[in-house]
Length: 159
Image (cartoon, rainbow, N blue to C red; front, side, top):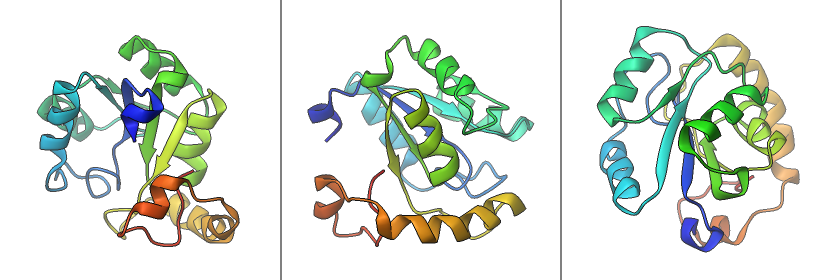
């Protein structure tokens, strides 16, 4: 799918996308996936609203650039990530677990976005509140062909 879209860069959320919230415990398979993307010529950058030392540990473990204090969905961190990757928005996709942070921020700069299920139920309090709004919005989104083919997909479409 990424190849079909012409994607050369991935802006990847951290908390509850590739690690449980506020930890450095990478989800199984993530380091291998990032390496596979690298070998395929797809660059990756981590973007997080956090500032903590743990986020630097994850970026170091994956050997990818990091943008901290993102204030997502504001577009500034997405633009910084695109500069770090040396790519235009149309050549990148954002991957994250939050519709009103990761997906909205990507869309504000003209990128595609893929929303994934959170890897943990433990979340920042504001995120828990926004999940209520997400549940109202998800049924109204139009699924992409990729979501229709994903046997593991729940009711959430790719955004």
